[in-house]
Length: 65
Image (cartoon, rainbow, N blue to C red; front, side, top):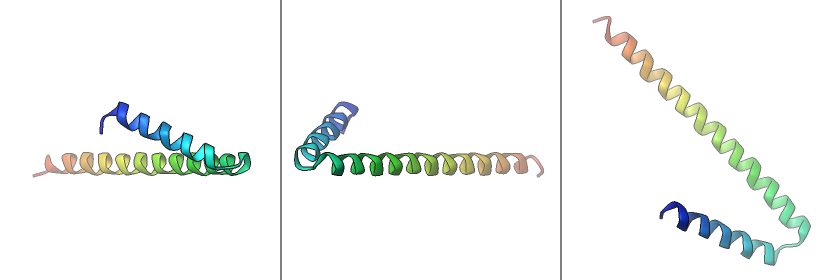
């Protein structure tokens, strides 16, 4: 799935949810998904930093041989 198809799918899902939810439900769902997305991005960033740090440490140690 390319970026355009993914964006279209997300938009279609949002429309489907918006049509079937009350304003309060829609607001709560939007807040929940925003928090989920932010938390996932934070975790992915931390994993990336840890992997980069580990790779750098291995590179530094390889010069000791």
